[in-house]
Amino acid sequence: MRALAIGAGREQADPIAIARALGAEVLALDGRADAEGAGAASSFAHVDLMDAEAVLKIAAEFRPDFLVPAPLARPLITAGIVNDALGLKGVTGHAARLANDKQAMREAFVGAGVPMARQISVGDAAGLRAAAEMLGFPLIVKPRSGSGSRGVALVEREGELPATLQGADWLAEEALTGREIGVDGAVIGGEVRLLSIRWKMLTPAPHRQAISYLARDPAGEAVSPPVATIAAKAFKALRCDNVLFHADMMVSEAGEVSLIELAPRPSGHAIHSAFLPLCYGQNVMESFISLVLMGQVMAPLAFQRPAFFSFLPVPPGRVTAVPDFAGPIAEDGRIAVKCALNAGDRLGPLIDGASALQRGFMVMLTGDELEGMRMAGRLAAAVPVEAI
Image: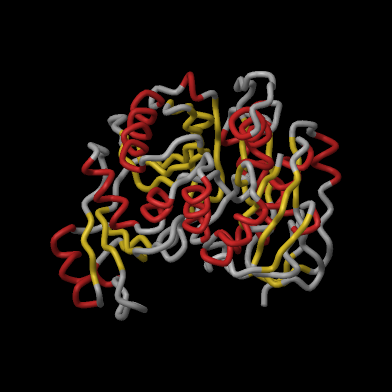
C-alpha cells in the first residue's frame, strides 16, 4: 500500500515511521528540505504544504491509499482537500476548514447542540473592551484562525486588556470555570471511541499552555458519557469519519462538561508518540493506521494503566551543563525522560508549546497526580540553569 504524509516535521516523524514499519510505501511532503521526518519516509518531496493545488498534483501522481494521520494545523486543510479529491478516508475539507476557524467551528457546533462558551468577534481594542463589558471577566482572548493554545490569553480584569490587537480577526470568549481536560479519541464507522481523558495542569494566567496531564481509564471516568456525547454531536457537524481527534473541554465543579475546541487530528506534543502507548501498552497510532487505514488485523486496544505526563518545569535561564537524570531513573523504574537540552541553551518562560517542548518531558506510570508533579519537579531540578 502507498501512504502520503502531508508534513514531515518532528511531530510527523513517528507516524511516518509507523506506516513504513507496517509495510506502506510512504512519500513525505514538507516545506522544509531538512524536515526531521524526511529520512523516515520511503521518498520525500519539497513543497509548500499550503499550496493545495501543488500538493494535490503530487498526490494524484503518487496515488496513495491513505494519508498518514499526524498533528497538523493549517496544512490540515490541504489534507482534507486531497482526501476529498482522491476519495480517501480521513479528514474532509469541510471539517479541516472548520477546525482552523474558531468562530465558524463554534457556530457549527452550537447549531448541533454542543455546549460552548459565549463568544464575540472583535476587530480592535475598542471592540474588545465592548465585548468585555458584555461577557464580563475573566475573559479569553484568542485569534480566530488556527488551533490549540497559540495566541490564547486569559484576561482576569479590565486593566489586563491588551491596548492593541495585531490584525482584525480576534475573538473574545467567556472564560469557563472548572478543571480543563484533554480528550483523545477516534471516530470509526461513525462511532466515537474515547482513548483518554487527560486532566490538565495549566500555566498561570495569562497563558493557557498545558504543562502536565494525568490520564486514567476513560471507562472509569464519570465525565466519559457527556464527553462522548459532545464529541458525537461535534462530528455530526463536521461530517467527518475515520479519524483520530483531540479536544479540549471544561468540567465544572458540578460535573457539567462544555467544549472548548475540537480538531479532527491526533494530539501533538508527544501525546500519541509517548504518552498513550504507556497507557495502552501498545502504540495507538499504529493500531489506527493498521486497522482503519490499511485493513490489517491487530490486537484490540485496551487501556491498561494510568499515567502522568509533564513537561519539565525548568525555570528560565541558561543551561550550564547537559542534565543527568540517571539517578532518578535508576531509583524509580516507572519513569522515562526525553530531554535534549545542552550546555549554552537559553530558556525563556514556559508559556507555549514551543517553550514546553524545548525543555523536554517525562512520563510516569502512576495514577497519583501529586506524585507525578513531585517527580517532574525533581527532574527539573536536575537541569543546571543560571539566571540571565
